[in-house]
Amino acid sequence: MDECGLRHCYPPTFALYKTRSEVRSRLSFQPKHMTFNDLGLTEALLKAVADKGYETPSPIQEKAIPRVLEGKDVLASAQTGTGKTAGFAIPMIQLLCKEPPKNKRVIRALVLTPTRELAAQVLEDIVTYSKYTDLRSMVIFGGVNQNPQVNKLRAGIDILVATPGRLMDLQNQGFISLEHIEFLVLDEADRMLDMGFLRDIKRIMSKMPLRRQNLLFSATFSREIRALANGILTNPVTVEATPENTTAELVNQLIYRCDAKRKTELITKLIWDGNWHQVLVFTRTKHGANRLAEKLNKAKITAAAIHGNKSQGARTRALAGFKSKEISVLVATDIAARGLDIPLLPYVINFELPNVPEDYVHRIGRTGRAGASGQAISLVSADEAEYVRGIEKLLGMRLESEVIEGFEPTKGPVEGGKKRVQGRGRNDNRGRNTNSNSQSNSRNRNGGGNGGNRNFRRKPRNNSGSGNRD
Ligand code: AMP
Image 1 (cartoon, rainbow, N blue to C red):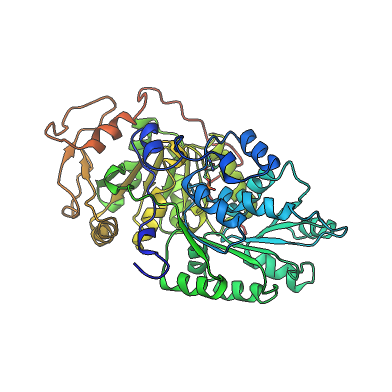
Image 2: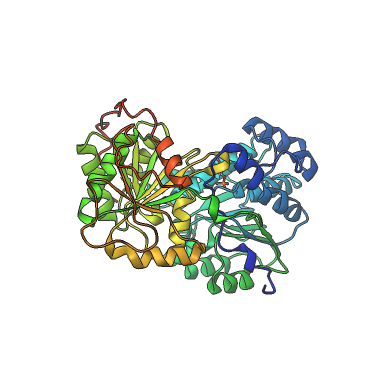
């Protein structure tokens, strides 16, 4: 344990549990715990939270909200899916409301996020929680015309959510002043560092008053994050979302071994046979994401790619289509997927394993969010054996691995699990190893849904998976 008490913050929470009640008891929104009334919130906030349908605070909210209300700097270990946004937004809004907005509004709170999607989602939450207050908030990010943003800034706002690039851009043009900042929130700070935003963050901070309240949220705590925290936070309190009893054994994860060149065929079969919708697929490269989305579309599975080379319009459309279930499969790269809030996501498939084991954890954290169960499946070829080892080391457990009949790898078994052949026709148990006592097997088969019903929607015209506009 170090001075910040950080050892227990890592690895982060996995959210892949078998049943809703298991999630409730193990992970998050436990009725026997506090209520929002116990947290010292004002009527305006309580009403907004009730409207949103939240019954009880999540662990990170229970821990963070009172400390932020006390005016403390907070270092929080929490990834997306734990309710962290409300954990910082609700108390921040309450404190900002103590003082009515001045005649000419000034920006009093800044939330920095690594990606445009996360920025948009954070703003959406802030608007929801502040709906019974006089506060005004807005989001700025790159990839879209700056003029509407500038006009809105001119009208005056209290809370600004921003990605670092566009913020600095508008600051340099004189449209933004950070002289009156009272709150700074760094959301997903680890990812901001991964994306090379450290210098930008420092530059942005240099334009703020020294006296302010700082909140730093991060899923992981590397040496760099600790250094950043030391430079920003004053006598911080540390809070973490990972409960002690979170165990990786309950995570529903499965590897299917196959040859690299047959992965497209296999993923198509899995999605078709299982009649899966709302599948988030990860590829290692942007190009790979485009290619796979195209091939899935050709196989009559509606799919769109989301990654950094896509225009903001294409990214927003793809995400909206996925959320509204017009698109069954979203193919994403790690950075693009980070921070996406897609409730009740049932399936995550690693088309390729990430070479950084922590990214695997982030990826599978996309499923089983806020009380839902989910499955994480990885298609693993022989050349990825080393990645499997790295992930297993990080998780501290072996991953179950299987082979689908007809897709046996020709290049030798991937390490990291027993060799098992499973017959996988729809509702078809032929060829399955009946000795299997794997829990994940039965869960995966159950997740197959009504296999005979091939009712995928056709590709919407304006949601082509290709294109590199920016
Ligand atoms: P976040 O970690 O902030 O991205 O939140 C993840 C999801 O949990 C979002 O869809 C939130 O709306 C939802 N959520 C946040 N707090 C609660 C709560 N106390 N009860 C139920 N759902 C919540």
